[in-house]
Amino acid sequence: MTIELNNLTLIYDKHPAVHHLSATIEGGDLLAIVGPNGAGKSTLLNALAGLRSVEQGKITGLNPDDVAYLPQQTQIDRSFPLTVTELVATGLWQRIGFHQSIGHKHQTQCEQAIAAVGLKGFEQRMINTLSGGQMQRVLFARVLLQDRPIVLLDEPFNAIDAQTIADLTRVIQSWHKDQRTVVMVSHDLEYVRQHCPKTLLLAREPIGFGSTQNVLTTDNIKRAQRMVEAFDESAPWCRKEDA
Amino acid sequence: MMELIVPFTEYAFMQRALVGSLAVCLGAVPVGVFMTLRRMSLTGDAMAHAILPGAAIAYLITGISLIGMTIGGLAAGLLVVALSGWVSRSTHLKEDTSLAAFYLISLALGVLILSLKHSNLDLFHVLFGNILALDNDALLLLASICSISLFLFALLYRPLVIECVDPLFLRRSGIASALAHYGFLGLMVLNLVAGFHALGTLMAIGLMILPAAAARFWVTKLDHTLIAAVVFSFAGCYVGLLTSYYFDLPAGPAIVLSLGSLYIVSLIFGCEGGYIKRVTSKRHLEA
Image 1: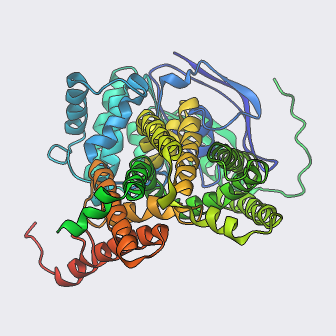
Image 2: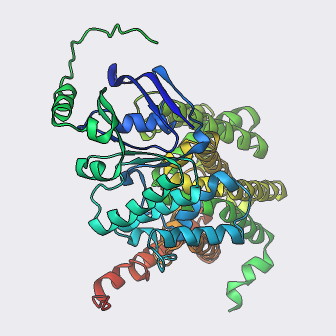
Image 3: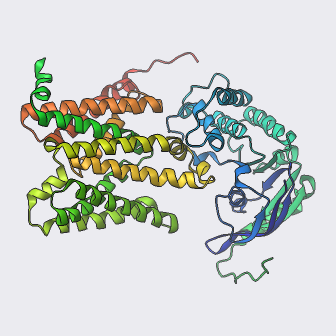
């Protein structure tokens, strides 16, 4: 399953957040999207997740039903009175919808997902009592339960301790081994160098795309920093051809 | 002891008041629990005001008519929901602002329309309801709204929970997110209209919010909160009606005040974050 980004432009208030991006994400890729703040990483991920419209160009080969999306934790209301199991079980939504009951099979799957992220024994804990790292484990368990061929992760390891990162990296690697496509936004270049074979370096415009080693060069990173700072209120309208 | 039961066995109007208010509670309180969890308590208050002009216009046309005022209230409430939802989704205004704008227009319009009739008594009736004068038709209406509301609530329960915890999760699966959002606002309007027949537009929201707020001081899990809130609301209505009977007080405010007392007692004595518990409990476990 190949995802094609074809001359993609995403706009915030007339300014391009992602500018004329073309790239091919192969099925089974483990791809990191990196770049400075304001480079359009999360915007691009939102577009891939189908959460925002595409102003110019196209994304092809991406069926929204195939996607499991893990947003940044700030999007989640942790004061809501749910248990760990209940939150993980929301990952069943695409399969059971409004009315199908949660059967024995589903319960077992929930338990397995919770165990796989190292939270055995936490099943009945309320989510407002969890630490940031534990909450991230819960959200990974939900993605496991969603069981989709494409996984999108938005800065999954922001403010997360080393042990949790190591455990959840094993989960990401298991997805990679299962030939799922994983796209993750990250700020941690060291992590990306170690764990992600492919990288898209973004500074609104694509600076580099391909094997991580070739993309994350000192030159490219400097160039990305300069590009993203060039935000011009009096810039003329972009005349680049729409493909 | 008998004093606690006699008013309800002796007088049909007290029986009707009790049955009617319990029916309103059963439908409205679960919705109220979600309103408190979604930080929409004041949104509900705004919505209650928005219902007024619909009821007022219906009253101008049909007089004090059960069906007319129900339809009028529903229409006005749903119109405000739809308009403010549309504005907040398609402009940069947030939902609270757009809702406030429409409810204020609606409220002013309602008061203006009612004043055309030159009767403060009618205004009083619409604002504060009349639980002690429920007839068979009114009871049937309240029971029907309660049934419809419970059915819709059960249907929307899952997407509603997900929408509360993680709104982006559902937005990707298209229709369910919009259904949960507008369906919930619709449920709110429906129950406010039922509540307005019983307690009036201004008090109706008290029946939804106070038991829910009280319940959260006693239990933590969502299902327990729903059950506790409904039980609290039943108790509040019963005590309120008794108080109004023995002390000759207006029933609507008596019910809301007894629910309010329950809330304040919970605030102080509640075992989940109540004031005394927080001040006295300094002990801690080893791990």
